[in-house]
Length: 61
Image 1: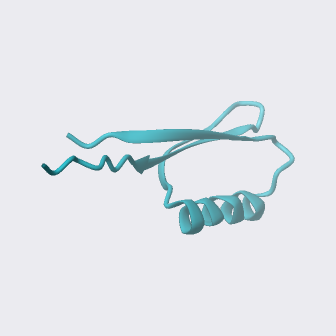
Image 2: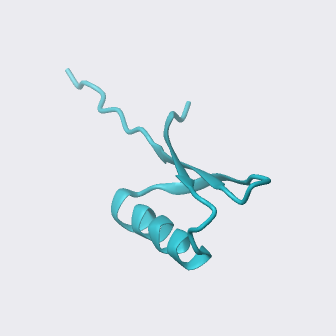
């Protein structure tokens, strides 16, 4: 079974789409995050859920 860790980013209404795109690209490139969900709220705030796989090292005996 694959396990993921999540990170939630919230951007206020004043943040441009280009700035949001740049932040998400940086997280994807350097932190190996992938986009899981995006939500745009009525007031203009944007919330983004990122996820990445948890890699567990198994013991070998």
